[in-house]
Image (cartoon, rainbow, N blue to C red; front, side, top):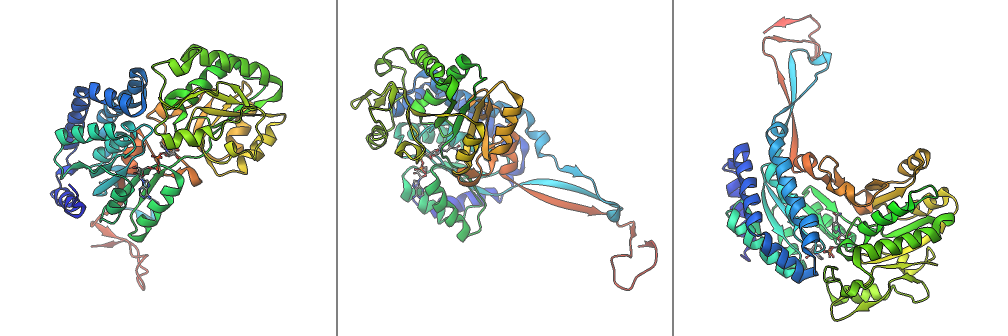
Amino acid sequence: MTDYSALIQQQHAFFSTSQTQSISLRKEALTRLRDTIRRHERDIMDALKADLNKSEFEAYATEIGIVLSEIRFVMKRLRAWARPEKVKTPLTHIGSSGAIYSEPYGVVLIIAPWNFPFQLALMPLIGAIAAGNCAVIKPSELTPRTSAVIVQIINETFSEAYVAVVEGGAEASQALLREKVDYIFFTGAPPVGKLIMEAAARRLIPVTLELGGKSPCIVHKDANLKLAAKRIVWGKFINAGQTCIAPDYLYVHESVKTSLIAHLKQAIEEMYGVDPLNNPSYTRIVNEKHFNRLLAYLNEEQVRIGGASDRDTLRIEPTVLTGVEADDEVMKDEIFGPIMPLLAYDEIDEVLAAINSRPKALALYIFSENKAVQKKVLTGASFGGGCVNDTVYHFTSPYLPFGGVGSSGMGAYHGQSSFKLFSHRKSVLKMTTRFDLPFRYPHMKHALQRV
Ligand code: NAD
């Protein structure tokens, strides 16, 4: 459908029937979504293979499995989350009770990126449905096969008046942004995030921005180096580094640099083999434009591990750069590919000063056995979320709100945070009519009055 106004109006009309107020309807909707995804598992995997050469392992672990487990998590708890939340009342409000009602916004617009094209379109949808909204998803045009499977799944599961998909690029998003939606959930690059927020501001539409940036990873001198290397290689090179929370660059204590590099090399070989370009399970770069952008970062003198690439298959080896300076090109923008610059440091304060001189990161990772160092880093830098002694894994806990801060985004979702994000929290005070306190009225100084 290209008549976006008609589509959005149809959704408003459906929303106004109040059918989505029913928790049973929401749970049924999530059950149907789960079942359709399960039926199309093979199609999703094939699409992800065609769009990004994702292996079945990655497709399940980082896209399908995560979505199914979010549905399971939400369905179990939805009824309890949706109950009005009773709150205390102060003494001045005697005779009253307070409660917060979770109210759906109405029609939610979800604009998704290409890097986890299935998961990042579906995860917000789960929250939007759980909270009782209608939704329109705009998947990324850069992963067309996955976009087509999303259309198929949504069309098989929902009426267009409840949940719909609009395919297309920036023009489709912009056309949708001119429509009267009630909430905008955007995942993508910070410059586009600014345009989305501008469009939302014109109509005072609430917005969540899940953006990106350069996420630092610090390896202190007392870290368990072998384990750190394994977890860094996993978080950095899964999806060929095209992950918003991948460690973008590494700060390593000078005294353990050589040893960490040896462990990184070993971990890369263990996970991707000695010739990753011929490993059929290694994800490719999404398109030639991004492939060229990434190759421009490769300076032969700095390549310490990897560095080879294959234009025909759009793949770049897991690569580690050393001898990198803070003002090198590779340290300017988010890398979003399998290239990891490594910088050495002597004092943790230098690292914090360098991190704090940059825009706030979406994620930060600190590897250290020392609690004081961990605390210093966790409290000394502002970032969306992160891990101590791991990378990326915080994303997969439904108990942890996921989102950015500053230029890495605003708002957080997953699990109950998603339910809250897509609900207006409506505060209601219920007052007794059995008596009335005179203090608040002008010229009425007497004590309790019967009504
Ligand atoms: P992108 O911003 O280019 O595109 C995201 C979506 O916005 C797509 O659907 C696209 O069609 C649409 N779009 C593009 N230009 C637009 C415009 N001018 N007006 C309106 N809509 C427009 O991002 P991308 O390249 O798909 O994804 C990569 C970026 O997303 C990286 O910066 C990454 O860090 C970030 N990201 C963040 C998260 C997160 O959860 N915070 C997750 C994945 C990716």
